[in-house]
Image (cartoon, rainbow, N blue to C red):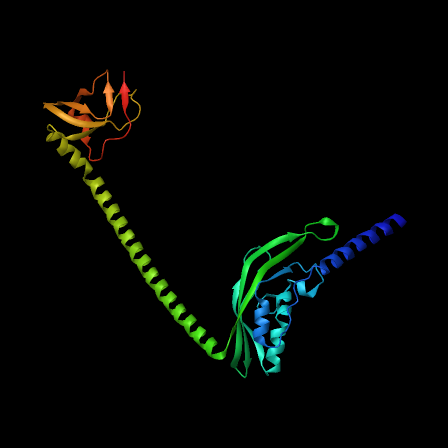
Length: 295
C-alpha cells in the first residue's frame, strides 16, 4: 500500500513540476504603454505559443478556444491592454476579420485580423493584426509524454485612426468587389469552356454513331472500288500473327485479289503480299508505331 501511495505521489509531483516548468516559459508580457499606438508598437515581432489541449495552467499560454469566434484564450489576454485603452475612452473592443488556422484535425482556432475600438457603434481606432510563422508543434507533458500541442506565431500590429480605418475598409471593399468580378468572369469562362467541351463531345459521339452506322456500306464500297494508293487495314491476318492492326497501301488490284505493301508487317522477309479484297477495309489513321514480323 505504501508503494502505491508513493507512486501516486511521484506522479503528482511530476505533473506539478511540469506545470511549474511550463509556467516559467510564459509568453511575453506586453506592456500597456502610454497610448494605444505604443501598445501596438510593442506587439510587433513578439513570439507567442499557446497550448491547445488545456493541459498548461498558465493563462497567458492557454490556447483553449473561447468565445463563439474560437479565439485562443492567451491571445485575448495579450490583447487586454488594448481593451483597457478602449474602455478608458468609453468604448468596447470588437474582434473582426478572422483568419482560420487549419493545421490540426481536432483544433480549429481563429485569429483576429482587426481589433476595433467602438463607442456607440462609431470606431475610435483600430489595430490591424498580422501573424507570421503560424505553426503547431508537439510538446512534452508530465512524464515526458508528448501530449501537448502548441500554436506558435509571431505578431505584428498597425494602429489605424478612424479616417485611416475608413480608407482601408473602402480599399478592402473595392478589392472584394474586384475579386468577386474576377471570380464571376472566371466562372463564366469555365462554364463556357465546359459547355463547348460538352458540345464537342456530343458532336464526336454523334459522328461516331453515324460512322458506325455507315461503316458496312463504306467497307463494301471500298472493296468494290479498290484501287492503287488506297490505305487499308488487314481484317484477317494469320492466326499466329501477334500485334496489329496491320495496315498499309494498295499497290495493284487484280480482280478479286490485291497486291499490298504493309507499313508495319513483314511476312517471310517481305513487306508485300497478295490479299483477297474481302479481307481489306479502309484505314484512315496514322500508321501504328509497332513493327511486326511473321516468319
